[in-house]
Image (cartoon, rainbow over all chains, first blue to last red; front, top):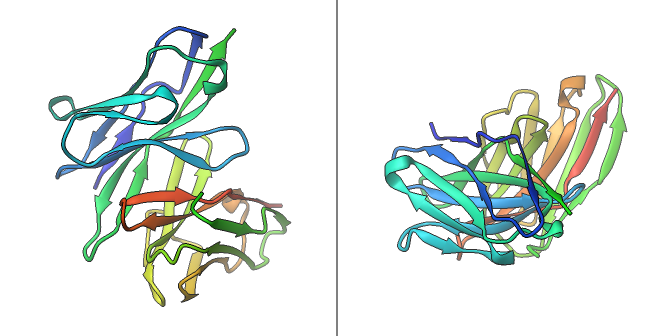
Amino acid sequence: AQSVTQPDIHITVSEGASLELRCNYSYGATPYLFWYVQSPGQGLQLLLKYFSGDTLVQGIKGFEAEFKRSQSSFNLRKPSVHWSDAAEYFCAVGAVLTGGGNKLTFGTGTQLKVEL
Amino acid sequence: DAGITQSPRHKVTETGTPVTLRCHQTENHRYMYWYRQDPGHGLRLIHYSYGVKDTDKGEVSDGYSVSRSKTEDFLLTLESATSSQTSVYFCATLSGGTDTQYFGPGTRLTVL
């Protein structure tokens, strides 16, 4: 069965500083990988995804993530954090279902706080 | 915006009562999902559907049932609610063209 580990429960960064959120996954085949963001009281918004091809993927809001198969990692990065990036971030791995479709397994999330 | 609405958005109920949550989509997506979100657990899959009347269990399905009689609606039922089912429930649909799940706004359920 697939699993996702987000080792950092809370991270605090200063506005303008760089950010890296860690994600490690376990999955038997080539994974579908996702990062979602959740603002307080809101649903989940997709930041970016990796299915295949270029291992560095670009997402919305200036985020990027790099797939490293040898490390089973899919870390999320942003070169300069804005106060509006304060939110909870979830990494997820998608398992392909027979007949199409997928189902997601989520990490426990990383709460990002941005200091002004 | 994946055209997903959930109702109700908030509900308070008592232990032992039945509860039904509704997810409605306008995109004609084949796959629909129910997740629950709890602090320290992230989101966990309860049930999913891959077509009308076609459903399967997720990792935390005990105490929950689902039904899908129309493509656009996916219902989650707690036959006899317990305090451990206090949670935020999210519905999602899968965009077949992008293999990406999009989430609804959530339903906050409190079982007293």
